[in-house]
Image (cartoon, rainbow, N blue to C red; front, side, top):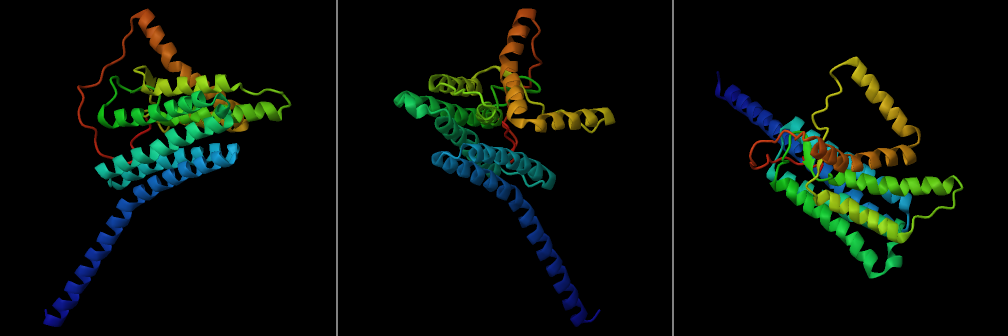
Length: 276
């Protein structure tokens, strides 16, 4: 092989390596971009709550949840997990599932009518969400297939679904307004459930692709939820929030303990890993 041919071959090899390196960097950047989208949606929800645009503020939290799910899935598919990504995801989740729902509840629930008490109740929710996310990062769940406490996206979903349900009642001609003290207590209870030791089902190990019947059931469930989301999401949210305490009480009464996980170990580093 002549020197010129060897030089051309070396240049082709370098170009291929450079292309692979660019693709690798782009792949690693994608989960972080999705996490940034999660953060942006949460911040947008906060600004909408300030303006009193309650419906769109709630919808922005929904989009934040979608981005939160996607960033973890993409990170695992592309094998681009990192400790930085996990920490960044937790910060984004604190805004989207802590600050944004607290501001939504403060605005939609008219907690400002309660003065200092309303501020404290909204802050309690936000602080519990931050503590919940911090605990998830350093401590694995005690039981297999369970979260310790209500997951922060589920808590945020409970808040926004309550806002949607109240709007549905008003649109239906029912002169019903949730009293500010009741709204404030509801927000505080949901916040405290996040930091409670009550086990909640995670559903992370549920696989719908195992059979055709399970896929059909999933599609039917989706259709039912989307038929009247302002009602169905609220009903599902209430059922899930109550499921933790009710199941814990049932297990205590019947003496049927849950299967414990292995001793605590450092969590694997992955962005988007939290649903907690």
